[in-house]
Image 1 (cartoon, rainbow, N blue to C red):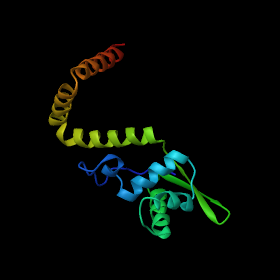
Image 2 (cartoon, rainbow, N blue to C red):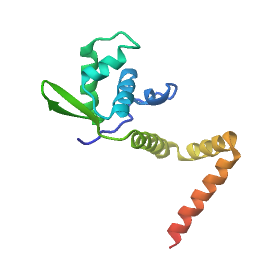
Image 3 (cartoon, one colour):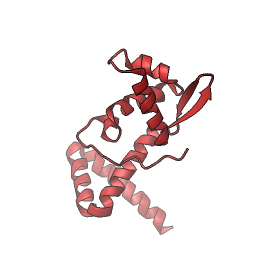
Image 4 (tube, one colour):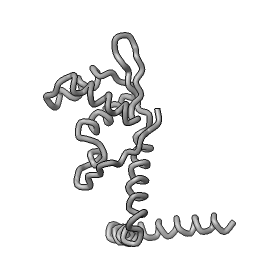
Length: 143
């Protein structure tokens, strides 16, 4: 299934995947990424160790994740087995790409300026890394 655009409601002050997914969606995706294949029952059993929720709630959310293109579902017996359509590292890359592309479309100068400022504040060596990346890109363009 084709992965739909991930960023429709970016929540910058949330933590981790909750910035782009609902709270329960994020927890479910973490579980499915860990195990690679899971039924609703598998996920429900892991989640209910830490919180109270209904089996049908997990089933609904996993269905939504399938609709969004993050999970594939395959019927096996009386249940569906869900697998991620995108790896966790690729998901992160896609989220970062969508956020930055969205910012660059409308606010390129402040976005670049802030990124460089943040790189410099966090660790001076990051500026050197950025410089190396830019030089590499320029040398590729010159060939």
